[in-house]
Length: 250
Image 1 (tube, rainbow, N blue to C red):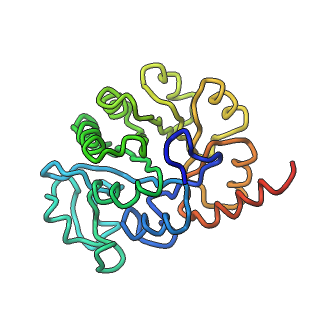
Image 2: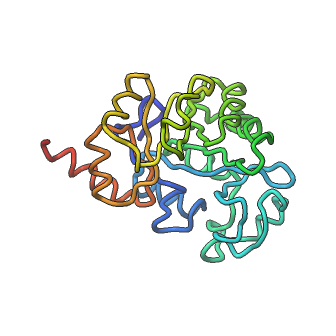
């Protein structure tokens, strides 16, 4: 079990929105299953409600993943708590970030993605920092985002916590701005990860965690070129492939 950022195994298997190939994404059911499946870490998405609570939800809207409708930021926490994903059970309701951190951090590292993309200047980074500090789990998390403002503001609030820069576009389009954004890791899409880029990022002192990888052949390729970890919906499959790659000489 990895107890800190430094102790994450390489390559790490990170359960994307929990074990979301098996349970509804971003629910306690998915996160608890990732623990039982022995993932090395989980990834989740954080957003603010209308009354300033931090919930775990990827989309701006709750329509795709729950039985509710509307934007997360237009609902209070009390309203959101009544909706659920997949089935009506306590562990499939929209969770608070605090609930997930309390359930998962005794066992696994947690990557918190700040997903305030529709409201990039809100106070989500400060709210998450305050919550992490209050719960005493600073050594058990790292934070990432496509939003450079969110990363910058979180790093200003808690510089001791590692941050990761998510890359949606080709690295040449955005990564030249890296000097303005404090980060210890790169989180690129698998489609533009090459051995040369991994080597370059490693020379710059960055870890490389790649999203979202669900095909065995892509897992093998990435493990063989030396990435630090992958985000996957299927931790069981990723661990199986990782074991095969380690057992097979190049």
